[in-house]
Image (cartoon, rainbow, N blue to C red; front, side, top):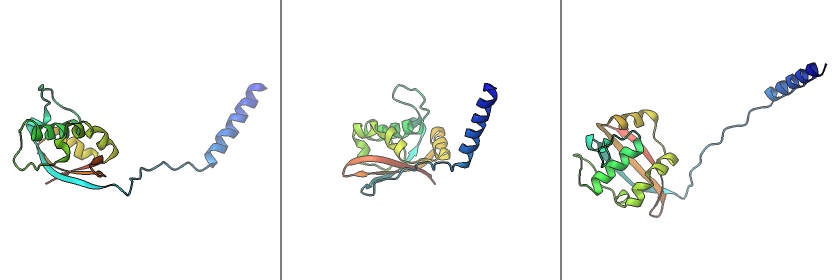
Length: 140
């Protein structure tokens, strides 16, 4: 008899939970006081796909970071790469992963960057000189 009551109680709980509307997922809202700090366009070439030790990079943020290190530190620039002042600072390049996690890049763009031979547009947002997020787009 106890087992039947437990099953009955569980079925009532299940039925009740199905009639309650689901909670909406939260959405990320960006602080309106943040502004576009800087934008640049760069070509992701072969040199950008490998770190300084020759190891193949596998994440879009790693490749974008390497592109900026190649541009600012190693003077390895692809034709048409635009400069930027924000990622000329090593600390800002180190923060690129978290800035991209807070920003946006769609899966297709990320996959194209990992393959290489693609143009990207990077928009850096924040307050003052402090970057908070980047939005990355693949362009023609």
